[in-house]
Length: 271
Ligand SMILES: [Mn+2]
Image (cartoon, rainbow, N blue to C red):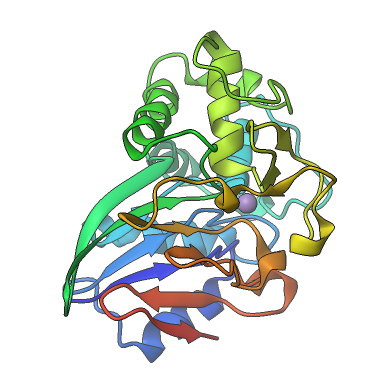
C-alpha cells in the first residue's frame, strides 16, 4: 500500500489520470490525498469530481477556496465569475450528489503514515495555518467550519463566507466572522505577519511579500513533529525552503505540472 498526496487538480482530469497511471495507482490497495481545489479554472471539473467521489474510502480530500466557491454558487450564494469553468458541473444530472459529497469533506486532515524508518505525522490543509495555532487548535477550528458546512445552516454560512475581514485571528471571534476568519487562513492565506494579519491580495512568489509580511509557513509551530502538506500557492513552484513543509501546487492549470508525492518515501512524481 502506498499513500500519495497530489497538488491542486483544478479540473485537470487527464493529467490526474495520467499521473495515477504512471504509479500504477490501485484504489483497492493505495490511498490518494488531495490538497484541495479539485475543480475550477481547468477544463474537466465534472469528470474530476465524479472520479474522486467514486474512489470512496481510498481518497482523502481537504476543501480549497475553489471547492467552497463552487458550493456557494450551487447553493445560491456565490456569483459565477468570468474565469470560472463550472458550468458543465452545474448542469450535470448528478450535481446535487456531487455537491453533497463535497460539502461533507473536511478543511484539515491529520494522519500518521508508516515510513521505512518509523512513522511520520502529517497535517494536510489547502492554504495554511495561522501563526499561533497548535495542531489541536487547527483541527478544532477546522471542525467548527466542517460542522457548520455539514449542518442545517450551511447555506447561511456560504452566504457569509466571502470577505477579507477579520484581518487577524482572535480567540474571542464569534459567529460567521469567526468561521470566515478560520476559512480564510485554511483555504486562502499566502502571506501574513507575525501577529497573523492576513494579506489576501498578493498571489505571487516569495519575493512579492508586502512590507512586514512573510509566507505563513515562516510562523508555523507544528513542524518537525508534524509534516505539513498544502497547495493553493502555485507561484512557489513547489519550493518552501523549509524542511517538513511541502508545497504541492505546481500550477497544472496554468500549463505547468501536476505533482504528487509518495508519503512512504517522499518520492515525487509529476506530469
Ligand atoms: Mn486555492
